[in-house]
Image 1: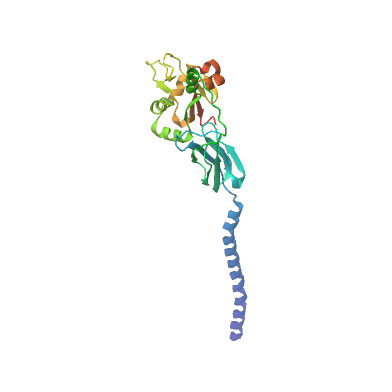
Image 2: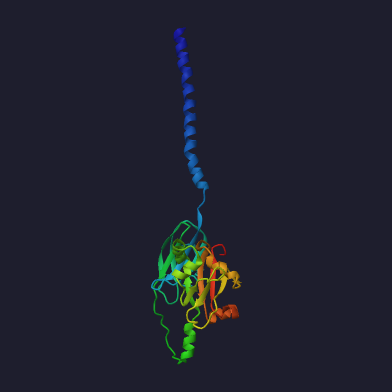
Length: 264
């Protein structure tokens, strides 16, 4: 009877081991498959691709450049500051192409991670104009043309440097004056700052101020010179015919156009 009891016990124990092993294997399989499911459920990361197109020699922003991401079939054009942006681009590396009349086409790969502004520098290229007609103009007209339209730009990339070196707009205009302009400090505690055109020797007029498309009065514009560089996206100064066409009499002494980061 004792031998029979030992045999019955051994037979009863074997089937009990198999279910425990099977349960352990199923548990391990479930744990191993969990990360795979999580990875499959998470989609691609979408970010903004920002950049600025500059002339390789003068470092002046290049406007109206055609910017293309061929593999994504996306196209945009740089603005007056040479700035461009593609919104909602999947993170990764893509070929980028930039084209502009008068420049050699740029082609290269760009890494899209978000949170940075890519700089594209274009090399000038002579343009074949075919037949050229020569017209003689008077010195007075030539001087008027030299007075210019767009005389100075501080684009988004250069503004990054200004944020490190300066604490206000008046400091920016002092250490990095826009072409043909000079900043005049306020005289006395109640004085107002003034941006003047250096070629206007006999004029006491100050340039008008436009912030995010709003033309400010002389008195209300004084606070702009104390504006923090952290608030400014880009700066542009226009003068002459361009200022007159856009702003009429208010643009007689030029116009300082400021685009803020909030106003974009």
